[in-house]
Amino acid sequence: MKLSLRDSVIFNIGAVIGSGIFIAPKGVLYYSGSIGLSLIVWTLSGLISALGSICYTELGTMIPKSGGDYAYISEAFGPLPAFLYLWVALFILVPTGNAITAITFAQYILQPLWPTCQPPYEAVRLLAAATTCILTVINCYNVKWVTRVQDVFTATKIFALCIIVIAGIYYLCIGHVEHFADPFAETNTKPGFIAIAFYSGLFSYSGWNYLNYVTEELKDPYQNLPRAICISLPIVTITYVVTNIAYFVVLSREEILASNAVAVTFGDKMLGGFSFLMPVFVACSTFGSLNGAIFASSRLFFVGARQGHLPRAIALINVKRLTPIPSLIFMCLITLFLTIIEDVYVLINYVSFVESLFIMISVTGLIWMRYKRPEMARPIRVPMVLPVLFFIICAFLVTFPCYVTPVEVGVGLAFILCGIPVYYATIAWTNKPAWMVKSYDNFTNACAKLFVCVPEQAHTS
Image (tube, rainbow, N blue to C red; front, top):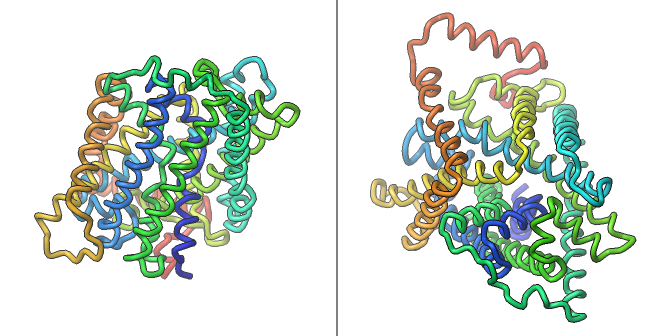
């Protein structure tokens, strides 16, 4: 079944709105310094995401292959940069996003039990780990269960946002404007801190390029892809900005910065005896988001495995359940490791830096192929000024945080560079020793026997 324009808009809105709006407001405010600049960051983050989406419409219709950035980078720059994208997606981008969502779920579900202080670190991490394992088991066992879980919890995030917005409008209408008396007080003007504020904002817009992954499933994609983007992202941006205004109307700058669960603090102040509803709805929202992320991420790496850029075991599926059990378990283990990190905003900075770097590489490929391969068919051709402007923005987001969070940036770069020897040792090296080839085969066969799996290619054929 092909996705209509309406389906595409709903898909994009659902992909973007997740846990970020319930956790990122604190990070944006902390690094921007003021309410006024924070709202500007939220607005510009939406515009940047829309600009990136428009640039990706040309990439998606020019290179109509599965895999998104992996396919674009591979087409423009060859197998090594494409492998490095898969490398960081496998170990940083996907599991880090899942870990952040799991921690957010645990933070919100436990906050009412510790109303006067923050929930213990151990309790939050244990619940986040247990939730990740439970959802992994569900994804391993039955795809229908996954879709049922998703159907139940998808609407709760919209409902939670509606409660926040309506309560904020009411509070504003009865005359509470004191927090906007000097909205730009304590503004941080250092470029590095502003860039990191954008990291938290853009993290909430993650998923703006997901529609490119299903280009082949759209009705009339050359028209509906840009239309869906131009409709969905302004809706998300308005929703996010209005939600943040509601936060700032009700909560002071100090209250937001002191809270690890902003929506819970908001509910405690505004909902009275019904304040328990807010953590429940937010927890349901993040639970559904984590379920969807686990479902999607486990299938993200099939393309790389088919190309020989990932171990064949990742492309195995269970013959009875038709689920990619080895991939799911592998992603679960990495996610569990990342939940140990205490500061969730460090995780956001890790994933945002690496993601910004590879998005910049993708848009660089668009600019490069305009000159290197002008003969390629481009059903959608965006004005050259747009990818150039988007490249400049990405370069700003990649460069300036180096001065503020050198450790996170250094770790991210070091991990990317570690992928180079892995590539040459496991992929580019064609004359591998027999013992190495046998080890790979034994590992794949062991996974196949343990999880009753067959290669995904064999199943689909």
